[in-house]
Length: 241
Image (cartoon, rainbow, N blue to C red; front, side, top):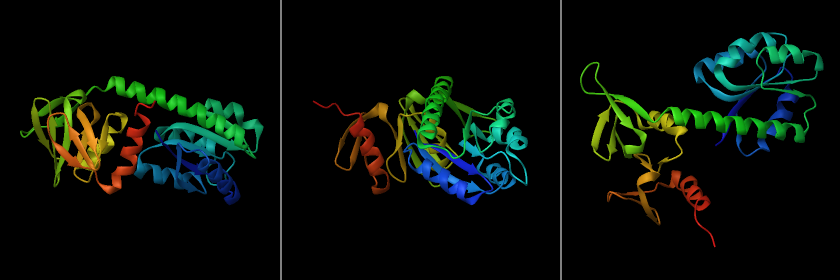
């Protein structure tokens, strides 16, 4: 699973160097960089969350240590990247998950990235184990319907609504398909195969070319936008001689 990250540093060359290192790690995705912590915090308040924040410490507007209490609310991992060894005690008191010294070497960076990847997998597994079901709003006021993830066969977009097809029937709720897709990211059994359909791999019977056939009998075309990621997943899980 790809981890999103941002970089905070008041030196442009430091941002460039760290961006190059991030680009060398396939499971890291740099979504934005900032010259100071205040701008980063403003962004995070809108974006709500990233997996990793790589932050300098000594910055003029707001230093990384002072910003930690806020930054930790918006990420899984806070990693300091600094030219100064002396900040280490303060960094770990601020609940930092890493402390990289500039200039950051490829080896030290990839080692830290691998360490965070393993921790991230543990977090996702824990979330998955704790979340075996979801609640959707029913048709009546203050009405809620419980749906087990394992019972979902596929989900169909209907303008501003979605229809959740389960092994026992279907339910309609007011939410967009993209929002539902985001909700299902922690579950690795759901795939969006076109602009209107998310399927559960638990009920995928076979794939014939561009057609995904589900065990209950439904068939749906795999859209060009989603085909490469979906087929790559299938290839990785295909038995080879």
